[in-house]
Length: 119
Image 1 (cartoon, rainbow, N blue to C red):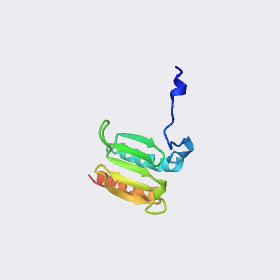
Image 2 (cartoon, rainbow, N blue to C red; image 1 turned 45 degrees about the vertical axis):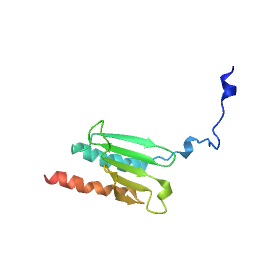
Image 3 (cartoon, helix red, strand yellow; image 1 turned 120 degrees about the horizontal axis):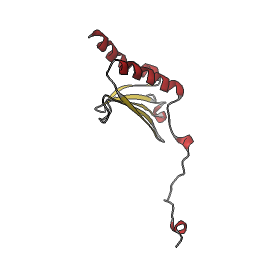
Image 4 (cartoon, helix red, strand yellow; image 1 turned 90 degrees about the vertical axis):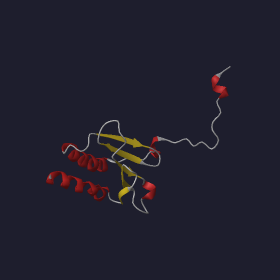
């Protein structure tokens, strides 16, 4: 038996190409990594992970390696016309900030930096 003749495609399966994958562009990633670097230098964060799929891109931030993410920065272009395509989630799943401009949404972490420098 030839294995190729027995393969049946899933019904309604769409072939997706890499152009359909949502990702952060260079400018957006620069903003995120800049803020990440500041909080790594302050000793708050230690690791990150990137995940890109067909509907969203996620930058996860970890306090320690091997835990659940402390924060998630998501880009969902489908929400761009409504609430804004960028959202920042806390570790409990609550939305901390949402908006059309990533740089403004990342200002939610400025409070954390101010608290760290005061102590």
